[in-house]
Length: 237
Ligand SMILES: Cc1cc2nc3c(=O)[nH]c(=O)nc-3n(C[C@H](O)[C@H](O)[C@H](O)COP(=O)(O)OP(=O)(O)OC[C@H]3O[C@@H](n4cnc5c(N)ncnc54)[C@H](O)[C@@H]3O)c2cc1C
Image (cartoon, rainbow, N blue to C red):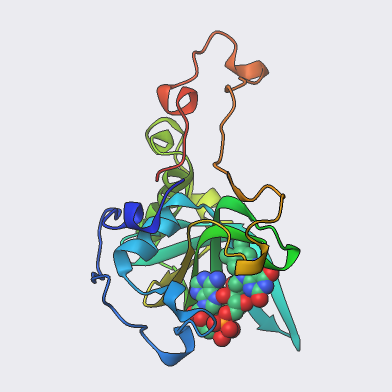
């Protein structure tokens, strides 16, 4: 299981914002209130959690409804990139600086307490708040798409055919600054009430880690060896 301490210090290229474990929240609205000792604001830890994940849940408001969509993302320094079709509801809503919330969750283990009430999950999660902006410059759009692909499969960008200009035009890319963000981390075993600790019920942690299977080439990959990054695929962390 990866601990919060093990996550400190890992950052991607082009880092803009830096910080220390003692960093406080960037604003009051990203201050973790419930179990505040689990709140972390260190930019390196936040970056490492974002790097280990690649699916976020994107929250935004439109037409009187609060929406939450799962989306892939990529991190480049202190920017997070999201992309999708130009007609995408979320991206159209957010493209001019509207407020968004991004949540990324890594599950490290299932925590089985003796009491049902005290069951929990070991996790590292990040919430990022702030305005999103459409990326207009074709060079940055191209970079952002490379970032998303290599965030998910490091090494793939060098092999894959780059996007054509019409493909670039068919995509909206959003950038969010990773400024107003918090992490929350739970580690360790169950916390049972003292009077329950001697109950004859198994308690402990079931570690969970993502597992990549053996790559399966499609019909057009006959005779082509899977590349090393596919054969040895694993998430960072
Ligand atoms: C896998 C998983 C399962 C969870 N299950 C439950 C559950 O079943 N019930 C439950 O009550 N809570 C659960 N939580 C915790 C939940 O995410 C919230 O942290 C908590 O419910 C409320 O915290 P709060 O009152 O401080 O939030 P708020 O006051 O709403 O949040 C204030 C600020 O704290 C920060 N923050 C809050 N939560 C997180 C987070 N998880 N990660 C990063 N930053 C955060 C944000 O910046 C937010 O803007 C779970 C978390 C995870 C990752």
